[in-house]
Image 1 (tube, rainbow, N blue to C red):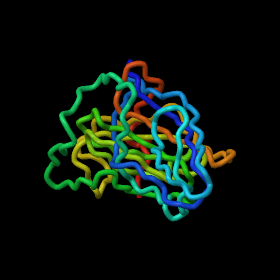
Image 2 (image 1 turned 135 degrees about the vertical axis):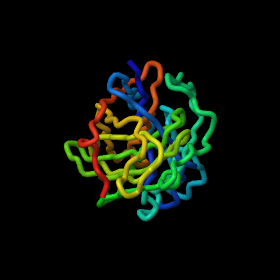
Image 3 (image 1 turned 90 degrees about the horizontal axis):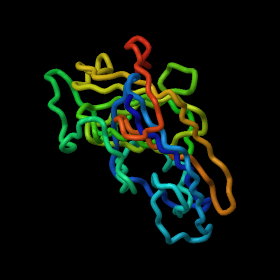
Image 4 (image 1 turned 60 degrees about the vertical axis):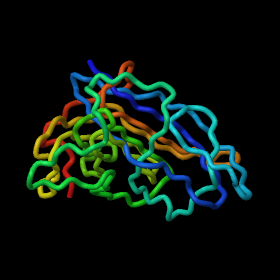
Length: 250
């Protein structure tokens, strides 16, 4: 049984106005039912940033503990554009899948179009929050379509594309509970909104819960990080999803 990694971090953001420090580039991954995914138990990271003129710049990351954040970003800055975030892990998990050599794209079959890294293919979010979702596909040699839906629903709320050997961070996730689906494969087809060659269609068994809480001196919000490849001592399991039950874009 393979286990994947899911890291939940509650991080702080101060209330003062100012720009939001955004992560760098994107992330990616792959699971199975026989295989199991891993979820990292959530840890609290509370912001202790002054409300006056903040001069400190700290990264909201995946590590547990106290973190300092710059002033609260303007509403328009929480659009949730996909980007790469490559924090240095304190302890690198041991992958159970074959590691790819680098972020060079897998050859795309003729007649297919590969979306840009971390391209958002569908966004039906009516409102934005402070939550951040990071998905790692760094140890897979297949691209990934990641779909976030509200718990109990089938219609995609958010769908984005991750290249093989890459990862993505999406900001602006509103409070709520969500289910996470993903598809791995090669040769993205815009007409059918899936891969010409599908390696896996999976769903994480645990829901992802995003919350925002007012704290003294700032706001605590949720950051969640998942891997789409198996790791040792993983804490999240996935279930294979039939093609007809996978959320359809459009």
